[in-house]
Image 1 (cartoon, rainbow, N blue to C red):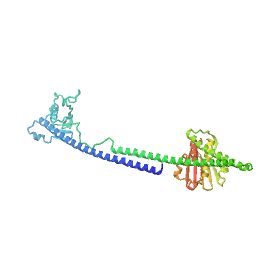
Image 2: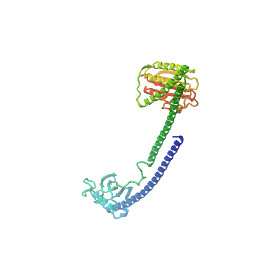
Image 3: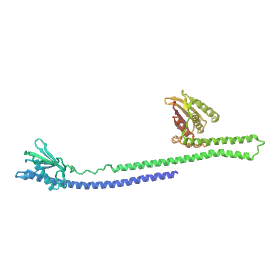
Image 4: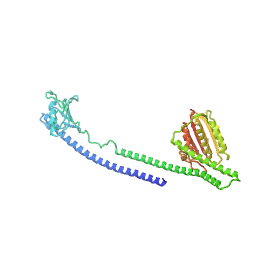
Length: 447
């Protein structure tokens, strides 16, 4: 997948997100408008209903009061006696003798005449102590009007009740009537929350998809680079072997045994080189498929480092390079797999030499701390960029070498190093600067 395709995917993804956002905003706007219109209509209807209910309640209570009043000047006595405290709560002043049973019957009859059809609670209060002296809940049913709805005392007032005191007022409460006008319609969850959740999920999905695409692109590039490197690495010895074999077939070396021996030696060395390259690839593939089995035994890391230095002095640094050892660790004997740890040290030293465009100067240090044994290998090579450091332990990845085109390999060395170190319970860290060199630091537990 090329860069142009990825850019197209990103643009289409962004356009899709913007389209979803626009549609959601449009529908939320329309839904909000419809809700506001519904609320306004409902407010008007409820306001009108409350107003009609209040008027009918006033008429009913005034009629009740007229029937209770025994004085001649009725109009004067009734003025201001019926007060509406809330939309569902009324208070009526009276100076007459008040019988609860009689008051209840009047309330039932007048409420029925005004078609109020609501449960109500009435209470009789003492004006002097401002405390309730009698109260009852009357339930309304469509079939039997204000009659008893169950077997308890609700709705019952004895007509034998004797009460002849005056100086009272009574109140009436309609519990099923809203005590205030309707408020703005509220939903359990705001539609904006749904919008944010949907956009968040789409955004996460888009980022995840983009991340997968970029990883696949990088993996494709790494695999392509690996195939190219492997083709080059395998083609070179094969070509050399083929050319040497052809010369042996065509030539007559009876009089020149040294030349015959030289061609045979070339074939042998190139064959061993080819065998080692194939073996390295197969070993890494085997590590991926099977659980790595380590044969740990007590081993001195310093001894392994000295052996690796001797090997490099003979094979790698013959052009004048130098490996300096600073072995300060007091405790260097660990339980490790000797073969694998030796390969780790050898791989790091090999990289220090390969990725150097001048005379290699390598420093190997060891020291102990509270966390265990530490080993660092520093070089004066070409260094790495920050973005390369994050990828160098990935399988098949090779750091770009710029003008340094003679670096060979499959990009498996550091992948193997990290795998072995972690199997030993350790960690590996990298610090690098372009043009100044790189330092690998390995930490291994003492136990």
